Length: 92
Picture 1 (tube, rainbow, N blue to C red):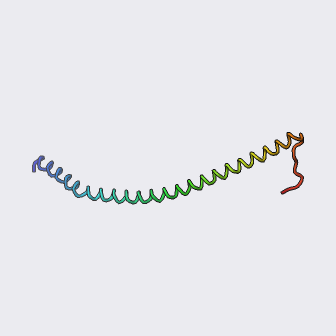
Picture 2: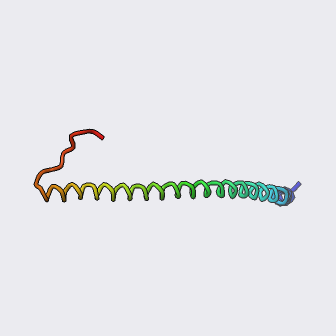
């Protein structure tokens, strides 16, 4: 058999493999894509919950910071009026 025959057979084999293999590869890729989309949607829900928690903590931190600022300002104002720092003698 000649070289051109074997070359034609190799080309034909490649075409047959491509015709059979392509749909299988496309099916696998679409299956993984669907699974990835479902996981992505689940992760987005979790991230939204985390974002809500972080926003809540941020609001709490701002409130505590304001309370602390007001508390320190109160003591500073009181000290500036009488010249003596306010000391606590009992524990709360």
